[in-house]
Image (cartoon, rainbow, N blue to C red):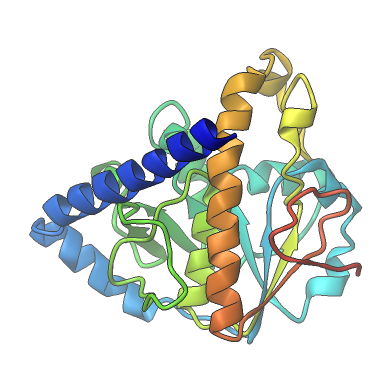
Length: 256
């Protein structure tokens, strides 16, 4: 395993260097600075938040059990809520993937219109595709992998993450939530031959997973989760993974 470990560490060095360089270049954009300054007005209602991934285990969640927390959702949560007739208003809705600003741009606009009371956090790279309105905020995504002593702020670029869950956790940390609950974060798509979500995903049903690529990406994804957990532990933030059947073991597991 020595050669593979060396290759992995070299990739981490390249990720850190490349992300920092790109973030430094984009920091000179005055429009980006103005949009990031707006993030100081992002609010929270509780000391505890619940981050909702879109793994199949989310179907088992009784939403009445998380009413005492701010809900942070991602990606196609709106579709899931509509299919399952779940009447909740997220506090924060995060959309960072390129898809939601290209072929999925209409979805993004519909989500923003549907949840007018929700704070949307979008990818700064696509600031010209979404109208800058009161409930829309932007974050940059070019920085190195998080370290436990880093000072987090939504006024600067988020740290490296190759999954929206990484960014959702960092946003929760930056907003000083004392407890972060994870639901629907199954982290096990590489165990199946097709990606499965908690909603009806026709596109995923038609595409087989390339496991060599999926496992390669998951190795980095899990590494980042261990670093996020180190940050949380060092800074006294409780992170509990309540996702039933999840194999994401970087955080304390719990049942609800």
